[in-house]
Length: 244
Image (cartoon, rainbow, N blue to C red; front, side, top):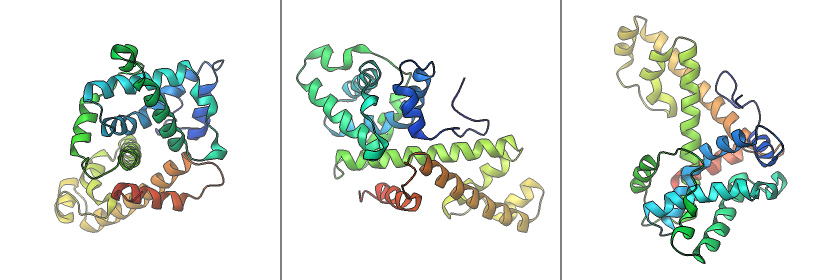
């Protein structure tokens, strides 16, 4: 059983996933933790790398952190009333790294635990593309969190378009999601899709609206009920720019 709905969105908020993941009696605990790992492992990997660890050590430390997150039930300390979940995770990984620094060799490298099958080659490629010389580990963590969230939003939106038989339209118009131009002029897209230029422009406008709604929903899923989505969206944009 998955926490995802048919359209790819979680039926519950991120904090509901946290609650399920930390409840050892809940048969969905491991699945909930897996969902959380998918959202946060790359930001944590980037943070660990920027702290000066090699790629190999960062892989093992990332896996080791999530292993301890489950085995020692660190999530029991996460409280939605005390702030953002990503802030809790950042504090937790700092504590984890401090403890690991006191150990040596294989112990420091996370004990060989592999909780998930993760694409560390891609994560390392993304890390090397980041402005690692001038950004702090914390800024890179926030930026990678923002990039991961946006990537998930685009993936969910594409899935919806595929399910409604509009996958090709989405691929043509994807560059317009953030105000850019389509991969080809509108009239060429219209010719390829055998429709009118006006219809393509309307479709691009609707796609941008759908993207904004999906983004707001994704942000809301990470917040407690009293938090403001617009304020968080501003923080997300600042994180992308390194102003966090």
